Image 1: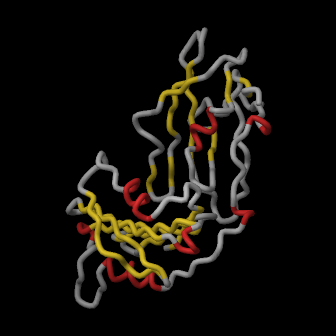
Image 2 (image 1 turned 120 degrees about the horizontal axis):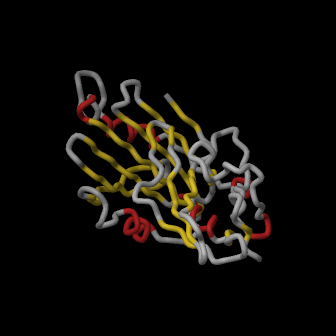
Image 3 (image 1 turned 180 degrees about the horizontal axis):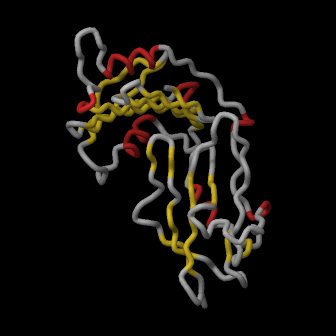
Length: 243
């Protein structure tokens, strides 16, 4: 099965023992491959992360980062194609309990499947119209729907490309009902994802003089292949920060 989004493609094996995601985005910080590797191998991450050999990706070389949890193995390939103007990532997750990661008769193993996919990848320049406008006070509007952003069933939808900190950018445009400075508390559990389905994360929002606790429901998501981007609104009870 293949899920094709506007900026990412995900492939699932029939038995779901292998999930493979490919994504490219601009190298906005102009990081080197070594710097990208350092960012991706967080020492506080769950489980051991090791740096492995290079792997061919089209006409480029990619570097493999591996997290091996025994029954679960994740490989992330990082590459800098097109004169290092963009970052390509390919992440494979294999599950040994379901038959992934090991050869069985004529069945190729997960690494062989991934290597064959990477061999056939072609890189193109990222067109200017692929970029999503940044969230800005100049385009800020307050919602008219009373439940918008304040209900789990009607969350604020944040899509972005390049993939940056959309939540932080969103709160940068928000002020309290009388223009007060707003702060937010990061949730302990972010959006939960299960095979394409996500749940919004809950952010506690505060400002000076606030009478009761307010929670914003925010869902960071990636645009589907045929979806059109829409700027997020500010929930009712709050205002747009002045430019």
